[in-house]
Image 1 (spheres, rainbow, N blue to C red):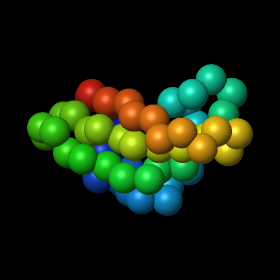
Image 2 (image 1 turned 60 degrees about the vertical axis):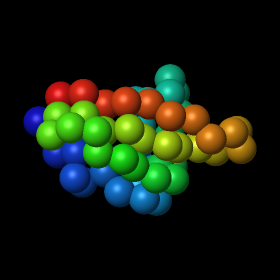
Image 3 (image 1 turned 45 degrees about the vertical axis):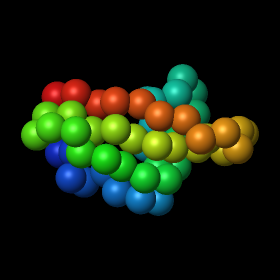
Length: 54
């Protein structure tokens, strides 16, 4: 089981973008089971976001 509190700024996470590692810029807890993640990939300087829901 994924622990949302373990995802913090500067964490490197695979699986958000296909075949890439994402570097977490910021996180925002939405509910007990949902987390917004703001991240960048190595080949792109754009800030992107994704919501993880458990």
